[in-house]
Image 1 (spheres, helix red, strand yellow):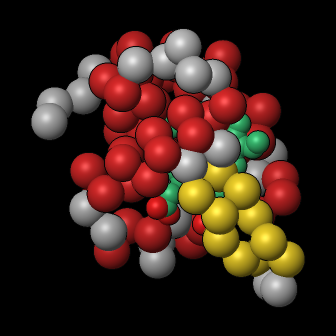
Image 2 (tube, rainbow, N blue to C red; image 1 turned 120 degrees about the vertical axis):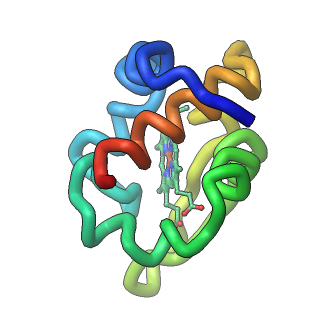
Length: 92
Ligand code: HEB
């Protein structure tokens, strides 16, 4: 898949920054490389699929939630992919 980073920033600002800008409740903080190192062992497409579907994880013994499409079902899969690509690009 190919992703549009400019659209990704727009999608990110509106739908993802609420959790990822400050890195609250176990959300990996955008632009903080050490929060992303272990995640980047996955392929970008795997991270996109998980962000579309949503999943739960664990942060220091507390359950975490990445909501499906960041909680906005109106987003297309492509838009979510664009936002993930934007976030990953911020730590490359
Ligand atoms: Fe999130 C995680 C993306 C929104 C919370 N996220 C995450 C990741 C990604 C993302 C890529 C990583 C994955 C892996 O590792 O595989 N997000 C995203 C996007 C968006 C979002 C793109 C928009 C659409 N989130 C969000 C929100 C919130 C969140 C809104 C809150 C509510 N996340 C989160 C968390 C996490 C994440 C908590 C972590 C989980 C675990 O544990 O892992």
